[in-house]
Length: 146
Length: 480
Image 1 (cartoon, helix red, strand yellow):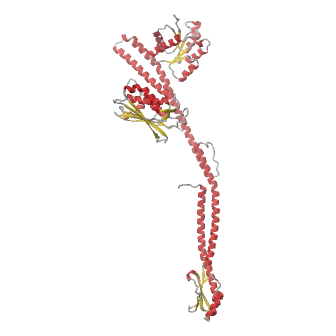
Image 2: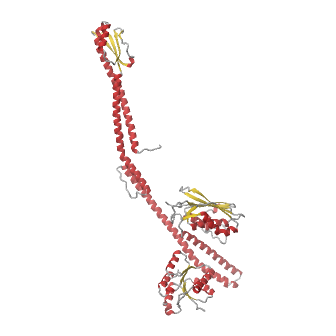
Image 3: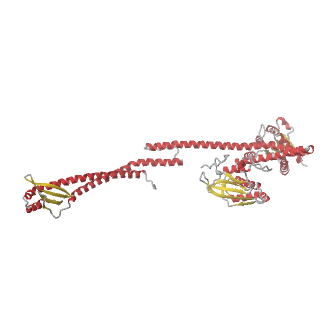
């Protein structure tokens, strides 16, 4: 049996966090989900500093689900920092956001996002989306080795 | 007047007429005066000749010696112009009269007494012909007319020369006006020797400045309006996105409630949750429509020629299910190729046709689509007038305006939000057209809309139409 994957969710809206957690719960894949509530925290987590110094409770994620509209540091800034870091840039980043503006989409892909998804409104669609992400990114795709 | 001659010709003709008139009248006066003078001169001559004759023939008349008289007369009268001659005695008996005498009325006739020793013994009547007089008058006439012709030539040539600068001034002004009107003479100044032309040019410059000012103002207003419109669309977009976020929470958690707590709720509680979930769905549709609406305005596609019949084939395919469900007869006449935003125009027909399907209560619904080419009554430009006609339930006249307003519906139904016709009007207006309808309750509705006819060959990648996004009634013609 394969090891569970580590997924980092960067999302500030508590309702959305809970919805995503519930959707993952329902997929019963057993993957581990860590949550960061703003851009600053996400960077602390990824670079293992501040609260996450010495790697406590901060396993390197296999994939990152990133919202764009975040307090303190925007999701876009987080994306840029990740993709500019030699170590982190190999982690697939899936932007999951409400915006479906052409310019946001273009900007994210240009900054190195691996995927761009607009958040569905219906919970059923969220469940389907989570299942699809897990199937495509975690089962079918070959991820970079840790 | 069919032809208008230029100022120089008009000038020359007028001068010629005036000079000719003057010459003719002066010549007439001259001749009239000449006749009197000449007659007096001839009379004096006649009197002179009569007197000298009277002196010569005096003795022979006194002695009534006819033979001597005859020979004396023959010797003395050499003048061929003497056309009338009579010698009378003291009792007015005619002593001599040649047979070749003219009528007295045709000669200048004088009568001189014949006196011998201060006693009147008879009279000489002598008439001179008018030939000499005519010759003199003829000379006068020729002389006068000769001078007249010279004067005429001098004046006409003079006027032609003098009007030259005037004509040049007026022509340059006309040329200047033409170039100003075309926009070529921007900032140029017209130099002229004529004060009037200068003045007119100055007035024109002032007028153009006012026109420019007005145009700048219009441009500014239009830009502001566009910016406002853009801002509005931006707001609509952002707001509808922000509205989606709480909606997601409501959707998910009402679902969790409905699923996880259904057993713990009574009938009333379950009904309330269902209402919440239905409202969420409706809210979601509204927001999606609003987003769609703002996206349509924000992300305009370049205009290009699109065959309307082909487009309607695609629309028919998309609506096939609804058409079959109601057994609708969709008749599409021959339609032209128009320059438009294809996506947006597809939406126009889709919305109009699906409305016509939805609001039809007849057993055999018929929808007819056609187009005629017309002339815009305001701009006089050619345009296409499309119609979408149905035999549905019709619309009351008081709702004719209301149906185009956002989220206005005349019937409650689960699916519709009432944005379809708002989109239709928006799209038609940004294409520079107008939309209106005719309807009779129970009989059907016809929607009409116009699209300006654009030269398909001239179509570039983007046809920019200004002002057409303005909301409200009426159309704005595309600016040149």
